Amino acid sequence: MLVKPLTAGVGVAVIACVVLVPAHAEAAVNPVAAVKRLMAQARTAKVIEWGTVMLGGRGRTVNNMASLFDYHFERKGWLKLGRSGVAASNLTRHVMFKRPGTLAIAKQDAAGGDLQAKSLLAQTSIHRSAGVNGRLYTAGKLYAPALPKGKTWAYRGKTFSGGAFTDQIINIFEPKTLQRLLSDTYEKKFIAGPAFNDPTGRVHKDVYLYRGKLTFSDLYAVSPTFQALAQTEPDESYGPALVWWDLSTDKSGTPLRFSISWNTHYQGYYSSRERAEGSTITDFIGWRSNLPIKPPHSSTVAAVSGPAGGLPEFDDVAEVIRGRRPRS
Image 1 (cartoon, rainbow, N blue to C red):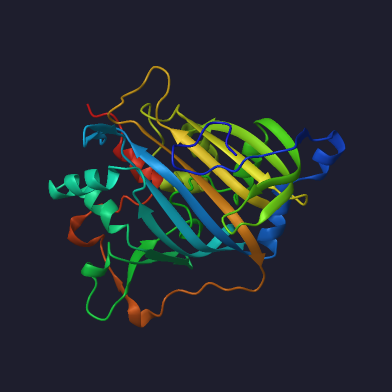
Image 2: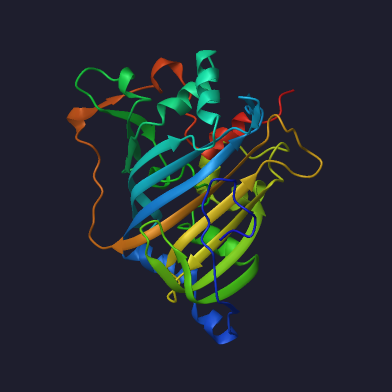
């Protein structure tokens, strides 16, 4: 559960029976050591990832009612760990418009030629991605029209961290990044008894909860994954803005849930039109051994320069943030 409220529309489990962690119990739990152990064992995690993004400047009045513009997303699949972190992924993803009026806004913008709206509408159909051996492959409506006949997968070039990080911008499977987070937590708790239900309905009990925050600039300084996502060092338009995070682990320190909430607004630099905010919850449903992730067969793959029709990809948070900077 995030200490900062998530954007409307994202469910947050209620945490009950919170007690402070005894010093001896807290010392026994080491999430960094647990993550290193999972990496050394090359374990594969089943994940469900979900959240929302709000784009300032796109809201308007629909049927005499003022409406913000946001979209929801869901990703499901597998992350394969290796000694260097996330080595591969196999995921599905799709966008949803849950707030009343937002689908109508997207369609209206798309009809007017807005490429970002067209890209989001295309993403309401399920897309698949596979990141293997440092290469990223995608299948879905954004790319299918650009593929030669008989090809179903678009090769999108080299990728990082198994192609697993788009909506989730913090990679806790970078031990140095995780250590940086845990070194600056503002709250640590042990939740005795039921803590939260994951998307499968399973109740997680006796959970350790860590909460913290850092700026986009701080994240860029420590995380190779975010460096690759951001492409360039965050400038003054969003570098000082905050990312809040929550990590829930079991008694061994193994991650159960990792949540973030971010907002490009910060004191002294704010533009409501270009403002963006969002949240992502990543649930680790289970861990498997000896579960390989393979790339699509070469006979089904063709290289493409980008989405069909010149559309922007607009399928990760870093793209959203870069695209929402105040215009000069």
